[in-house]
Image (cartoon, rainbow over all chains, first blue to last red; front, side, top):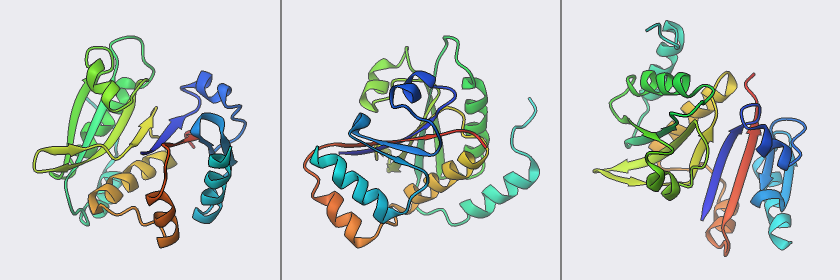
Length: 55
Length: 147
């Protein structure tokens, strides 16, 4: 149900470009439904996930 | 072959792995096609797995073992899957890393192994409750660079 993938952006530039990754870390939720730039805490990540799932 | 992990790092891994609880299964998906760092990642994992008998490593090829790669939803190489192992039963927890886990990402890999070994995400009750009631799949892709 939940998958978490780390992606080394320089080795997979096509994937990074698809999601317009500019800086790292950047977390892409459900293939672009949401995105979080920077290392954020659990609560902020949760809020971003909730926003993304509303779409 | 020269080791990738020096004595100091090996010692630190040993100290972290001293807290190891349940066994962990690492699945490495490499490729016989041109693949930056596949060889290095495989060697790195072999050295990590050699550090503790509860860390098991299995080596696969993303093309030759396509069925297994599909089951773990691995579509690129090198990819490391960190799974739980219980009495020969491997449970996919949806945790993977693609590319070479260098620099800070190596510490992340060791942390992932310890979290899976402890069978506890460490998340807050509120987040656990939300995730437990998810009604659709959730994919989090964290893009990083070696630093």
